[in-house]
Structures are given as C-alpha cells and as structure tokens.
Image (cartoon, rainbow, N blue to C red; front, side, top):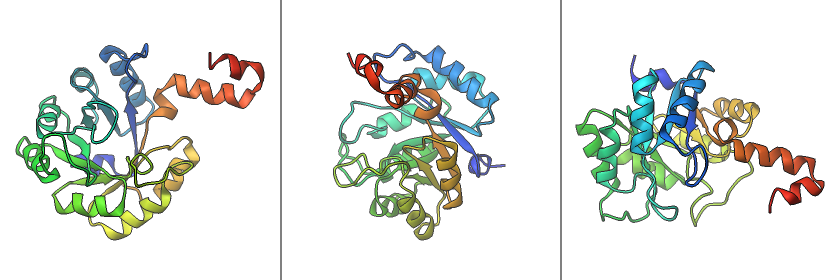
Length: 230
C-alpha cells in the first residue's frame, strides 16, 4: 500500500507548537504524535527537523514534514535546501508552499519537487487558490492542500475550512486534494470528507491547548475572558 493510499479517507493530525510556547519541544511533539496515533490518526504532520526526526523514530504512520522559516510570505519549506533537509529526516511527504509567490532562493516549485522526488519522498503543495493548485500539479506535486486558503494577501478567510475551494480543486485536479485549515470540529472534518477530500488535516483543535482553552474562555465570557487577555 502506498503512502497516499494509507492516508486516504482518514485523519492526519498536525503536531506543531508556536515559538515561545511550553510545548515547543521535539520530545513533547513526539508524545503528542504518539497520542494521535493511539486515537486513530492515519498520518502525522509536523514541522522542524528535530521534531520530524523524533516523531519518525517512534510513530509508524506516514509523516508529512515541513520546515517553517519566518512568519510572512513564503515560509513553509520555502527553498530547495529546506525541502531536501525535510526529506532527509525520513518524512514520507514534504509539505511546501504551493502558492505562486516568489521564493526566497529564486527557485520554482518544480525545483523543490524534483529534489524531493530524487530522495524518494512525495510532495504536498500547500495552496491558497485554484491557480496555485493547477500550477502545483503541473510542477509535479503529488498531492495538494487547501492549507493556505485565507492566509495570503489575495484570499479571504472563511469561518471554518474553505469547502468551496476544496470542492473546486477536487473537481479540477487529477491529484489527491487534502483539506487543511480551520477544521475545528468533527462535523467540519466530516463535511470536508463529504466534499471529496482525500484526507483531512486537523491541528489546532487537537494539539494546541492554548487555542482550545481560549475558545472555552471566550464562550464563558465575562471577567474571565478579559483577564485571560492580560
């Protein structure tokens, strides 16, 4: 069974922590990934070379790896060198920015795709629009995701996953389409699968306690919500 076959129809859990947070530690993310595997995840998505190496050693699931560099523009595995380094951790799939924006090293997406394929790994293109996804597929990406819909200057953030874009990509592309981004409930994950997603990636709603706590605090309202912001 291929890596993509193993992911089909299932939940990929994104195990990431933001810089400066208590959980920003490879060993912590390894344990989070192990817990997700016990819960029935079919794959793990993680970022950072040390995190990927730690997870690869103990979790027997397809691993989607990336390397974030900065927070603006093209920062998800932004260069060929980043893509190669991620592949060398043992990641089965290397997630890269799949938008049409210029890359820091002046390369094209096809350069990262070819470099990753040469190392025996697959490429997931994190896209924001149909044009992105079409170009990514043409460049040889093995799978595309809705990851960056609502996170670029030219796209609008939907409340929940961008199911409209997902349905369009599924209809227009011949490669698998993964739903990722703002999937905050089991019902939204089910809706994404019903819209044709090959797999669904969930991160924050499973692996980010700070955000989850904030959702509950905000729902309770009152003085507690105000105090939590100070």
